[in-house]
Image (tube, rainbow, N blue to C red):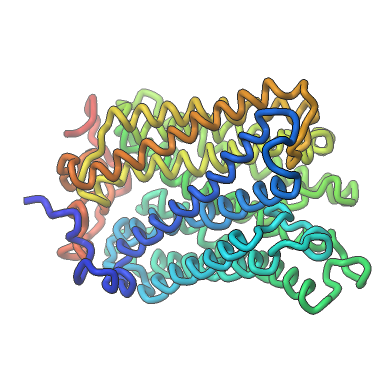
Length: 534
């Protein structure tokens, strides 16, 4: 008899049981609700931005309001959705299941991290409803320290507080993966999703304190008139850029590394093959995490950086592309002669590979000093960033959510609607952001709410694509919620996949496993048969 969807929601169903839970699966669902909320707030800002840019004149909102729109869009999406979404939702739910543990190493700390995340979000929402902030999500000085009269301090405090949630989550994952693996699960028997979460956690722990103290210094300078970044008080505005990008470029990999782990799981499951070059894919995650800390200077080629520093950062930026390319080539090799099933998760995985490849190749343009000088602060940067973050992170997240939804809910979703939405998202995304590469190359600066009329056609295409993309994002909310009540019972392993999470019930019981599993073989060992295992 299949378990009801609420089985793993331990100790009652009231609000108090949720707010005091220590179950990693419940906490993952709390995060799911929270990040979805912040996603749609950030998305609402994006809607207004694209409506404004449909016409050349700044005729929908004022320039001050437009500055607040793109700032709050970036703050909500980066700090409250893209960075936490996969680690907090899928990582929280799956890490203990994948290693054969009953929970994370520190269950109370896990719940505390959600409360800290929500507290930081409340500070930022306060800033939003009391006037917003207009500095850009990068908080560049002197905008954030001298020029702006908006709610910089509450926003900075919100980001500062939320940083502790990331640190605690990363610490919890590192200790759990080190100390709580099931008997027989050696490092090279771990699923690649765990390798990606481990690498991401290292960036959380090592990088997040830097951005936290940086935004705190902004608040201190505004309140106490210190001279950290203000030249009039002996400060250096370029120092802020060094501190900010030392974290914020590795933060790109916080967002995309978990998606890479998801794609590895999906490609193996729907090609019925072991991941080609498993060890190389695993080590490439660690290489990305390490090299990501060495390339921040390519964001500063026009900020007064020396020619020699620019040369070194350019070389390192090309170097960091190698481990990412390893993953793409190895996924492609895994699919070669595989028995591929074109289910929804695989469609998202293919979409991720295509969009991430475009984003990665255009990143090489930005690593070349001459090209970077030409396209810096244009829509080329916007397009590149979104191909990595939206095309990479969100495609991977949606692929993982669909792949593990039967495990999370115990139910199957409507496959036809899911495939339709995957196609709509892919088409809408490319229509939204590919024209922006052309706009940027032609010289349209980002963050302007008015532009020359010759750029209107491409901007209308982009705004039309954004409307299609929005519809694609709304459809999964409908059929996933519908599936909770009306979906077919999934069974413990509807995909015929390998991995410990598929050996327990769907949804899992409170302690995940009735007895501690023992791992006796390598990951992704699939029988050589045609078609998917029933």
